[in-house]
Length: 92
Image (cartoon, rainbow, N blue to C red; front, side, top):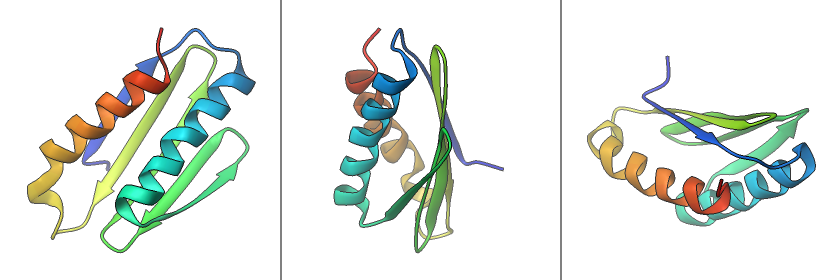
């Protein structure tokens, strides 16, 4: 079960949504030193103590993040930052 779930609506076509999701992923790779990989319309990412998926559908993007024990104390801060990033990238 995810520790953080963020659903962001968007009005983009799937190609534009995927490009936007890639921007979010690129920033997360930089910020959190993780690896990310696409499988169809789902981006999986992970690093030690942190993993999740970003699933795209027509009209929304759902981010699910699972935190390890060491990061659970920072869940609110992580959620706030990622929510801001997603809102910028998937502007409705």
